[in-house]
Length: 115
Image (cartoon, rainbow, N blue to C red):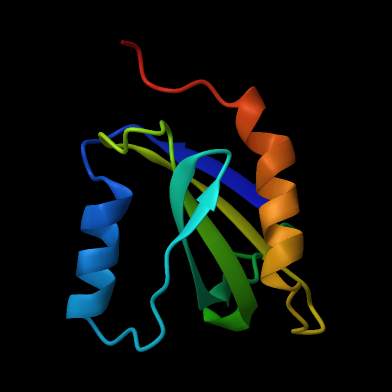
């Protein structure tokens, strides 16, 4: 699992419009703790680094599929969002309901932008 916060002016509504403008075919919005959210899937990257003193490493490859939930930092959706991403090496993704449960637990610990 990976959690990251982005403090910018891009709202979830704008993010959804960008997804719809692109090649996303199944864009749907959700609500988490009264905040707009959007789930999506993408592949991770697999990078191999040799720490044994050799200057070579493996090539960058496509890693397992990951499921991400982007959630607005505030209920007003004025910009900024938190990404909660889960993946497994088996490639089996959790149900969106599990991702929503994780978000409901993690989000209260993440500070929103200063007022």
